[in-house]
Length: 293
Image (tube, rainbow, N blue to C red; front, side, top):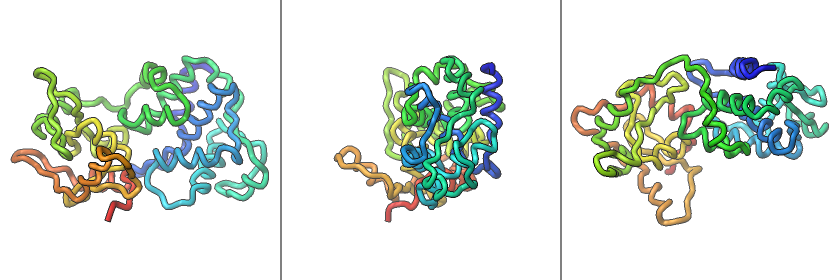
């Protein structure tokens, strides 16, 4: 199986992505198995030993969910079989937790795919395909670290062909519109004449059809950009900053994040207000609600 075959196969995973819905469960399981393969020489994933780690990955990097942790993990563990790249050592029903536990089921990538992924350049291309398709650049390194893969190695691989091209002027236009200041905390660092530590952030991720439009962008400092894309911070449709009740911090510096909760976003004259449709997407698909009370 060639690199092109592997990338094409992983790009065709069956996922529920209708109307912008995020469903990274299967890609996260494949990445987890790839991490196992590189660390141990085998892609085998034991339900008994590993379901909690898989559930944690889906909780941390998937959309908000009220499903029980084992149920979150059982979904990709049983359903990835339908993509013909995953096998289980016992035939168990879809989505059922109890048979997985009772039989101490072990899953692994199919033989041809596992053998192909033993080649480092193919493994890097496969991981790059999976993270680029599911996560923004601010989140992809965290995902790779969480599954035991080296972000520097993976993200150095050639990116997959893009179905859409990013606007080369959008980021500069967003920073200018927000007066080169973080929309959340006001950070406005410069090094010489260059803006530093400030990013143009999509509200609705570009990967999920987020447009390069003024109403889909915020200028955010690097910290608050990361927290926004991870769902620790959000915006309600009244343009008030929200902090997830799942976010915790013990230090004085970290706890300043709590002070953002309820703060009204300040738009300077001429700055385009974020569109409700993009805010609704972020609330539904990214923000780890509920918000602090």
